Length: 324
Image (tube, rainbow, N blue to C red):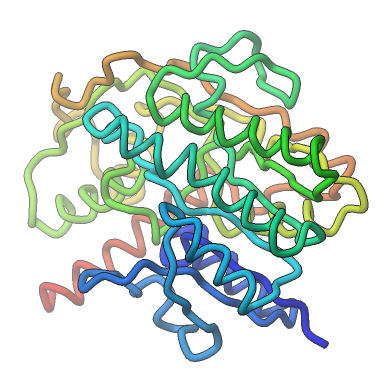
């Protein structure tokens, strides 16, 4: 029989790539979606006839328990979260309820329905925050610098706690920044690629950005979902850092993106205090050596290829939208 997997957050960037990957592995794929008149299925529209969407909400444990009882999956991937760091300062309680307590609700639903279900938790490099060592690895102490980062730390440790308390196959993937043409416009790399395309097509004249010195370890989301799957195929559940091991500044991101359309970023970028974080995370770079050694995983798409891919995608998107 086919394996069954349940993905929370299936309509997001990672959820859509993971659903595609699991379909290629011959899974029956189920996605948990909240009932809403504004749910956006754009990222999974091309595979919607191959997956099963069910109603539920990680804010409601009863719906999680019912979903698990109905589907009886072998694997659950929790990708649902309030995932935009900037918003976590203006909505800290909501962020905590979804991104932190939501993990507990799912884990406890698994414990009650079938403790043999394998669970993946989407942890985040934002947990390292004010970094205590460079590069960051699985044993690096956490020092989150946003309500989002704090919530992710809770989600990470409650996963460890359920693993150790109930002998569950519960694993956290500490993913560093991963982007794609499917990324939301509020995230810096997509904001850059989209606005570079607009400027190139004459649809905008400037791009307003925050801290240009911040450095991140950016990879391709399509590569990272394979690491999620590999973690749940291991006999022993462990936590893994998933990253490229290379870091680039926001200024480098701007340089590569504008160079892709033969423009000089310095002529179009304006720094704006509104986009500065109250507590900045200056340098994130992961050490993926454990994932490489134990999972056999390594990234396939380079930073430059990723940025080029995103700019070209947004050029095509905008040309189609504006009939250019």
